[in-house]
Amino acid sequence: MALIKDFVRSLWLERGLSQNTQASYRRDLNQFACWLADQRSALLSADASLIQHYLSWRMAEAFKASSTARQLSCLRSFYRYQLRESVIDIDPTLNIANPKRGRALPKSLSEQEVSDLLEAPDVEDVLGLRDRAMLELLYGSGLRISELITLEVGQIDLRAGLLQVVGKGDKERLVPVGESAIDWLKRYQLQSRPLLLGGDNPDTLFLSRRGVGMTRQTFWHRIKHWANVVGINSELSPHTLRHAFATHLLNHGADLRAVQMLLGHANLSTTQIYTQIATHRLQQLHRDFHPRG
Image (tube, rainbow, N blue to C red):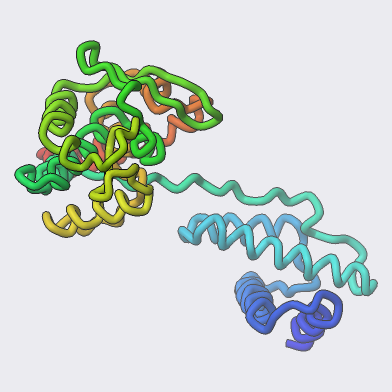
């Protein structure tokens, strides 16, 4: 279509956009033009109502919000160009709001998958025992990996079952530690940590085989290793166990504000994303096990 071809050429002349970007604009406009043809309309006669209808149709057809937002951006550029060239008198996209982009649900694990992951390390091995203690603490307290690997011996009170954590923005919080994690921490400190200590005596709680603190990347590779050992094929992220901690608490009836405090979230809205995971899980359980699900 000559109208689209002229517009795409202007993108290259005025803004120097790449071939891929030009192709993307061309594809989006052709898709819209085809849809308009089904509505017995055309690009230059489309008004705001018709464009809103198109965006609603895309959402109803389960196109991603990000893809629809990109299409609207393309239409805005197209109609502004036509207005500037005096081809049209009114920009039909002027008062159309961007579609809301839903927040992606964080990846989590089932309780059985977490149990399998925690039991994967060989605890008769020095590093295996260290990994078991770290995994237990990560899942049992909801720490960020960065908080876990920088944890110092003086920040943990095993008798009281509490951790003093320095989180984002150097904000401190007290985090309770469950009995299972405490038992593995005691065993690690008694059996593994003395063997990992080098010439120095660092304050860092969890040590590498070289006797120094572990990096985030090193421990993340250890998590993926143990996940592979037990056949966990879910897509993991560095915060998978933190997400599982929050989701499983909510599944078992924990208060949302309590979970917010445990995670160290500044805003409750950040924590609310986990309620969606819990709801999805309950819906799936209902479909799977209810006689009329």
